[in-house]
Length: 126
Length: 458
Image 1: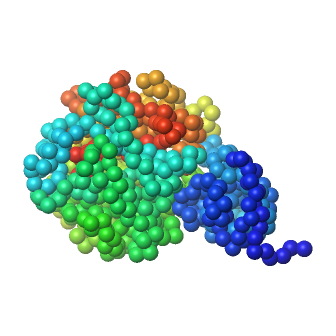
Image 2: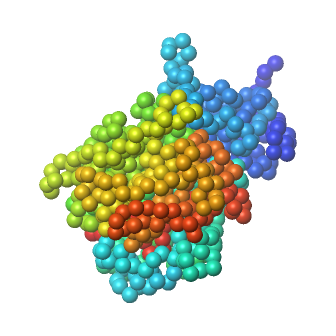
């Protein structure tokens, strides 16, 4: 049965790996840094994807992020500086996880539903 | 190195009495360029690199000092001096400090370049959170001195939404507040340049930080998330008075430069995605400002691209004698020199290739180039053009992913100022792929004594 928790267990699957118990109310960048995980970051408010990581299991609340487009979200990317876990999670972190984060926009254009959420056309309306 | 500083010390304030005077200054012996680790996967701070540019030195063409910022993730980008020729008459001022804004962190690092020019040190930090709190600004870009004080364009509000505005900092690097009295209906900001004798400032448009920081999506241009206007300001009233709508000819209008001659009203902007030079001017004092497209770089066919490849003209620079205009095409890979003796009718006089996606120059002076010509700085005498290859970490990662392992390079181009023409200097190359902490990416370059994009005359 789903229930609210104060802490969740985060598994880092790359970069030497590790399992950490983190506060559910705080951004993952902050709590993982406190555990000594060396993570990239930039703006620290959800605007720039420097800290993006790939979520391969579990769920987060990243409602504050404004940087990811819908394709990046569909590919599992989360912005650690604002993402808070809502379950146990498994993450790949750092640029090693960025294989699908960056794409040449001319060679591989976005579909209307894949744009950032504020301008994307809902599927079925395009 | 003491040469430029000595020249300043023997006069009154910093810089030079005129552009003609600046052209007679001793040749640059040191270069400062920012170098990035943000977005590269290397968990080290961005830094200010000192490059030896003295051909007589044993360390010529090498990085001889690295000043690391205190933390990671700033994305150092453009830089500017605390003072320039605009306070040449003020003997109490000197060009001692280089300001390094972090686009992502919002911090402004003030670096002392005077105590030891070869080994600059951190003087103070204007805290990014304090800037947000006091002025509701983020995403710093262009730094200009304003007589004895400093203005810095910011592309966003504290939440990274457009249009942002202008931070006013005093000579002690304290926040005064917002510089502008009004942003009018300006949707976006980016670069700016001013010409005090005509009481004018021109500003350009990139996008909101939340739009450009994560990378470039072409579809967002169609959704009007990127700029296509220039704005004319009443400089004394600090408010916009005219908009020049450039439309499809002016997609992503980035760098803005006036003629150095303070009497001239002619200036130029490069529209990056349209790959056009926009020339603007005013015929009569107090009249409307006009614009025209004077250079249009055609898109090029690429064997693997479904649509033609735009040049991406992301930067532009005017020689100190106002005779030559230099522009890049970051994706095509060429640097161009135009004779702009008649600013309405530029004549292409030189072109060289450095990297780029068209495969014209994958290697320069034995170094494989990832990226294309992007930022550049010209010597005061107009003869040496230093070119770097990285644009912005996320955009680099999209268009030139191999830059992660190869890093950026700095190339020097010899410019023929008599007859026109450019050639790559075979004795100079700085390979930032070989940096001690791993491949980094070099961006804007400046000289200790002032350069061709730093000084304004009152």
